[in-house]
Length: 467
Ligand code: ADP
Image 1 (cartoon, rainbow, N blue to C red):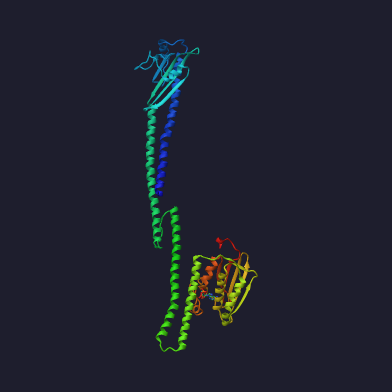
Image 2: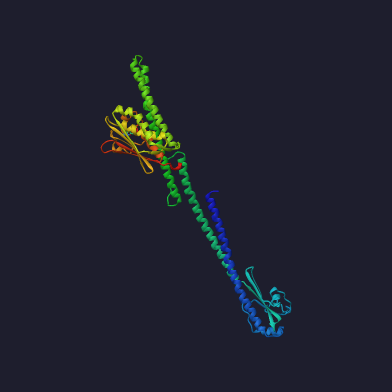
């Protein structure tokens, strides 16, 4: 069942209830009011007749007619006076006069038993009302008074009211139907616009946006949908860029390998020495390829979010391993490495991740350094976090590049990075790993020369969801 149908069905249901109430309740109340008024006047008229014949010890046709000459019963179509057996002594009706006959109208029978009786009904476009009272003499019932009224005037008023109510409800129904049609159409149109945009994006048209005017909930949803598509487009662009950058990175060493193999194959007179040199170059290029693919795999794993369960890892032994690995390269370059770790400094991660973070930062600090330079690595506990700092007094990073160095494949000096065996992915891996573990990393230039990388990571284990 569509929402439009649901809305229309509820409109119709409400409309029907309102119409039914409108066409019954006021009519019932008015009818009741008329009936109450009738009761008062008819009982009053019966009492007036009763008063006229009161005092007679016996009722006869003559004395009743005499007494009745003095009263003019008000608002009454017919007035009858009977003796105690219900025989009519006096009847005001000229056609069908019942004088001399016995009458057994319900009200009259009740009156002859000593009660005041009353009845009124709205039927066939008229109010039929009757009232009856006993006539007493010294507490003896000597007769009965019966009055009857046939009223079409009030009934006509009631009918007019009924017709007007019907007219008003018909008009209201028409207005509601028109309004609900307009709203329904708008609803369908606005939903349709959203649906078209969603379908477009589903089919890959990321430039598709939902355009809705106004300030209602649909406009809000459209706005949120558009934001979502913006982000989707950004991610898609980043993915395309990444794929193109990665292919480009892989293409360069592959091209070198092909070139080298072609040279060996085509040059039949190549001496052994040169051939060995070429093969060693091929080996280096192959190593570069494997470094790039390893880094790419690491990043993909980080992107997919399939992380190992972290634990509190002590920084000191991991850093020791990193330094042990880097020392030969550092010594070769004439770079000194100094470390200081606060006792018990820990971070929440896996050992492999911490190693990767420290290794990538420290390796860069050595790689982009000068002979005689130094690298300092610190780990300090600061409340619920551990701050890892890797600083060097090397070549430094220009201010305008600082904000980009964490981007994939970004290098300040491409040639230097390649020469040093860099892939341009080291810092991306650091930044992705750190943020996956709920930390943050930033780079800053040291005024005296060199660069400082500051990593802040939680050192207290929380529930899995928070990390
Ligand atoms: P790469 O594999 O090229 O080293 P990274 O992602 O590790 O890639 O670093 C990106 C770029 O940032 C490097 O190419 C280099 O230009 C610059 N960089 C990183 N660390 C330092 C540093 N300590 N000193 C100077 N430049 C650095």
